[in-house]
Amino acid sequence: MRKFTRLDTPDVLLELDAKTEKARWQMYGERYAQQRATHPSFEFQWPQISSKKLNQHLLPHLMAMTDDHCSYCDGFPLKRGDDTIDHFHPKTNPAFYSEVCKWENLYISCKHCQDSKGSKFEKVLLRPDEIEFHFNRYFIYDYIEHTISPNPFASEDEQYRAQKTIEIFDLKHKSLCVSRRHAYQRYVSDTDPVLSDYNFRFMFE
Ligand SMILES: [Zn+2]
Image (tube, rainbow, N blue to C red; front, side, top):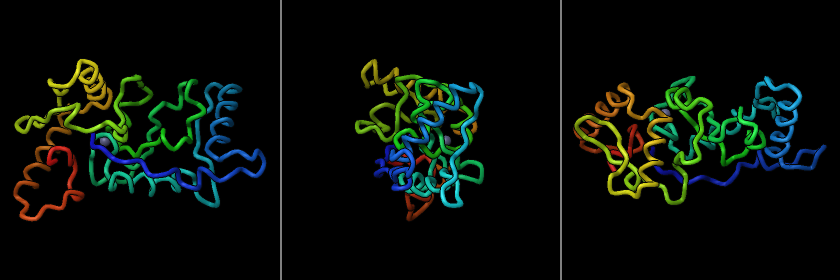
């Protein structure tokens, strides 16, 4: 997980809905909550706005914040099908229906992270765009095994948050360790590395 700064809410979410005079994101959240109340199995679909689905409007904004990397594992490049939008507060949890189109709740995510997280959620889960977040504050990187662990010098609470984040996104998965090892080997033999071209950039910072 690498820190990024969240950009302002895109206009497409802030524009007022002509009928309800509410911002689109708010109106979609309320509508989804009503639909789920009537049909508990109702599945969320991104609304259509001027010939494009809302997620297609949002993807360029989300990708710009992470330089096209996964928000959670920093995987790159994101292949087709990997560029999905994760709802940090799960959209299947009634407490979060209203956040289904809320900008701060949306993260570009690779398939690994999206599938690992699923509808799981813990209050302590770290967000890469938290003001105080920094990889080194919460995690340490093992340059031999290429695994990630909670930073033993962090507070007990911070270590717990790091541990839960590793578990929920399955950040110790073998395939991720192998990919990180490959990225590391490429990076150290690159005479003029461009950081944004690499995945798992937290290990070089
Ligand atoms: Zn990922």
